[in-house]
Amino acid sequence: MWMIATALTVVYIVWGSTYLAIHVAVQTLPPFMMASARFIAAGMILAAILVCMGRFRMTRHQVFDSMLIGALLLLGGNGMVSWAQQEIPSGVTTLIISLTPLFVALGDWAVWHLFRDGKRGAKPNALTFVGIGLGLVGLVILVAPSIMATDATYLNGYRVLAVIFACLSWCVGSLFTRYARDAADPFTGAAVQMFFGGLWLLILSCITCEPLRFNFSLVSQESVLAWIYLVIMGSLVTFTIFIWLMKHASPSLVATYSYVNPIVAVFLGWLFLDEPISPRILLTGGVIVIGVAIITLAARTSTNESGSQFDEKR
Image 1: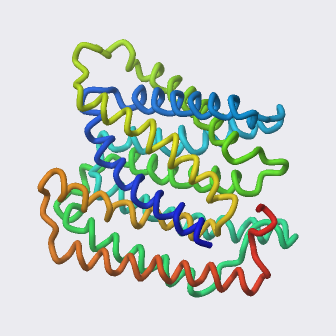
Image 2: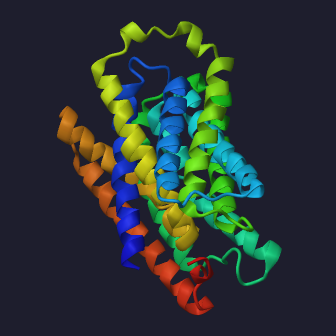
């Protein structure tokens, strides 16, 4: 259990910090090209490390699954959010992304309903939905002022739908990662998923003509340093940990990162950019922490009742 707690803490903190890093990186780097280079580099580095250790093993079937997972998580998830945020406020985006734990819980329930083999999927209990509800309330408190200040008539409906699609794509990719038959080793899988996810993003970058508009001489040192941080910490370390978590922990519990990351981002904004922390933000943090604690309790309760819903993956 301590390994899961440690891994979750890393995902909470590091992916929360990537809000700031991405903000700095895309100031002088095209978003799709930046993300593509980030994931391709991280995937190749991790693959090289595994090859040197003699631990890189993957069948053709596993390569195909990893290509699909990379498309779902990084192209459908990361890519669509990057595109959508060009025209819709970050507060609206954050609120929509907060639906991810709900989608994951419902998706896990659907898998349980579909297979009913005791190995795939889980039926959420009442505590799970209470925790998800508190998390949603906390994020509404966090982003409500920015949403209220936005004229809803100017929201691009296609971009809003793109964020919803991104949540669904990330949910499907996450559950596919967990329940894929003959799944690859989590670390090898993460390397291949990042590499192919980066290739999908590169194709999207070319479709949107980013390479034609890119001028390397205009790239700032701050953007380069932020990109390096995203490669090492955001992708190489934390994405790999996320893939490991999806094999060893309740999907609903892992999905709580989408509640905690914005709080971490706000704190880092206060620490590095002198952005104020108001009583509303402190209230939000308290509500979200309680919601995450309830989801954690629900996951442990469900595990005890089912005799462990994920031990077979260890």
